[in-house]
Amino acid sequence: MTADDDHRVVCRLDRLLAERGMTLVELAERAGITVANLSVLKNDRARAIRFTTLTAVCDVLACTPGDLLGIRPAPEG
Amino acid sequence: MPVDTAAHRPSAAPDRIARWIDRLATGLVLLGWIAGLGSVAYVVNGATQAPATVKVPVLLAAEPSAGWGNVQLELPGVEIPDGWVSGAEPTGGVNVDSRVTLAAWGSTRAEQVLARGSGLVGGIAFLAGALLLQPVLRAVAGGRPFAPGSSRRIAWSAAVVGVAGVVAPLLPQWAGLLVLARTGLDANPTFAGVVQLSFDSVWVAVLVLVVAVAFAAGERMTRDVEGLV
Image (cartoon, rainbow over all chains, first blue to last red; front, side, top):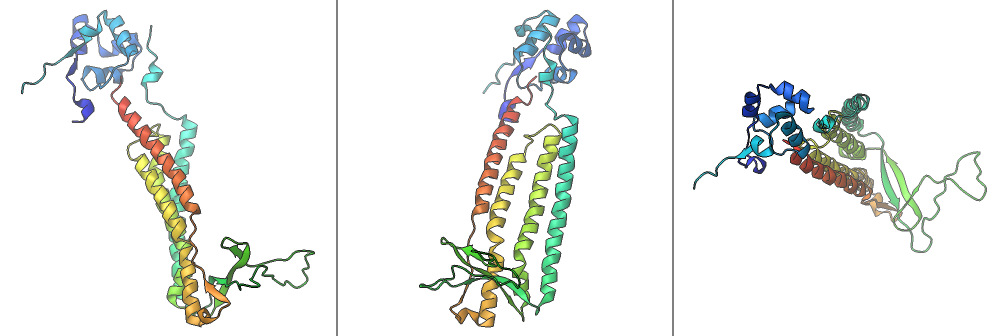
């Protein structure tokens, strides 16, 4: 694990898509973002997110960044 | 507002330029192999020539009073008003034509190899440089100019240029010393062996090293944006 991977941010895109009955491809088309990039985001492989990406995804899913992103509790010890 | 998707895709050189860079990489390696193998063949051929005539650089030792300021070549039927033709090259800090070529029969294998050594070093250095730069050029053609390892390869290329540029001219000079010793001309005050270091290539190496440092910075920036969506 590199220093860049050492974070606890999680993306809830999978859940939001399921709640809205939307596919990744559909979101990509409507948000104007590549499926590849959304896939990286959905699978928690993203290490940074542009404000423009965040805005576009939140606009389409009608959610806030707080709905999309969360943070795992720090491991004890 | 739709997001600018172009900014989300990795930048790729236009196809035509990429193809040219790719061909350049292939051509460079091809030329590198020709130069490398050719230079080895050239030296091996030289080794088989012994004891034929060997041509090596030596110096005409300047005399304190007169010196060898103007070494003039006499060519039948050629007259240059207020001038002359010289086969010798200036050496040292003063403009004295003292570097000449000594041709001597009875060469040893070592003399023949060393006399052609600059070609060998140059050819091998060309091949090494081509092999080092091919992945860099391919990465550039593939739209990933700052691919991991590019800066390291460029830095090694700088080292190759610097070392080869310094070492290559020394080998024929070494041959010159051997020839002077073998022929007994080292006892003649007219001649002296050439031992002259040239650092021109070091400046080129420094420039290439600067490029390597720039690429290293580019690699760090690329790592920073990896995983950016």
